[in-house]
Amino acid sequence: MIGFIGLGIMGSRMAENLLDKGYELIVYNRTKEKATRLLEKGATWAGSPKDVAHQAKIVFTMLTHPNAVEVIALGEDGFLHPLSKGAIWIDCSTVPPSFTRAMAKEAEQRGIRFLDAPVSGSKIPAEKGELIFFVGGKQEDVEEVRPLLNAMGKAIYHLGANGTGTAMKLVVNLLLAESMAAFAEAVTLGEALDLNKETVVNTLLNNPSAAPFLQGKKEKIIRNDFATEFPLEHMQKDLQLISQAAYENNVSLPLVNAAKELYGLAKQYGFHQKDFSAIYQFLSHKHQ
Image (tube, rainbow, N blue to C red; front, side):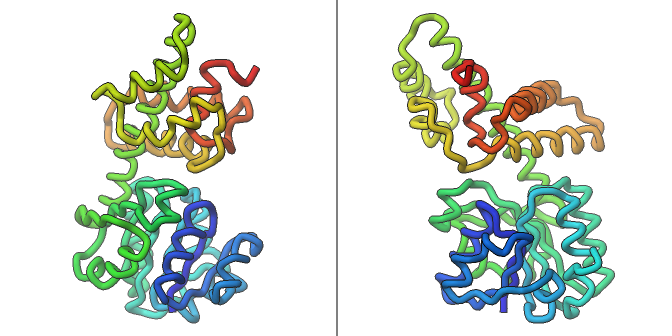
């Protein structure tokens, strides 16, 4: 039995892919409503994280914040203490590498194997089983769970010891956030110079300086339709984690801090639940 805790935009789709590949699942989420589709497809509901541990030998967590991971794992109803020795905990959450190493230590002290395996990709890749996994942990543990990761993703990068998976995820999201903001600024400037928005977008996307992922944001920007694939508030949270990691490792990242405040302002003005590409809408004042 596989346990899956955290059924938001990403977790629910990842869990569904496991179900579709024939794996037995026991699931938990703070709000049971988000598990409805999975339960209809045969998943078992757990009343608490602790209940997941009583039935699962492998537990996935996909949660938004480090404090949520800590409570779910180590809290009064946490799964880590009752999880059987030799079981594997795979945390797919985006959290600081220092936090990941702390959780790995907590798991090791209880005889639990631990992998950090955050993903690159948003709602659509999660639905299609095309996520990219960045994994930190022991090689033999990675190989044991590789079929499960393959059920949810198209690529698995084993980067080294615990913490290297979350480290790479922060590096990737740094570039993602800054590239999106830079593209949004370029389109905003083009419009201010009386250029047609669609022409500006297409020209930029056919330029080698444009990141490939921006093609997936093209229609959102042209149509001003920012239905959520990766929420802006999550990107702002990740930028905070990146800034924290930079501080912990004595690295100066001035552009990250500028981007963090930019996304923070957009969140403050009500863009938090829109797709993070809505940073264009915020910058271009199309919301006014």
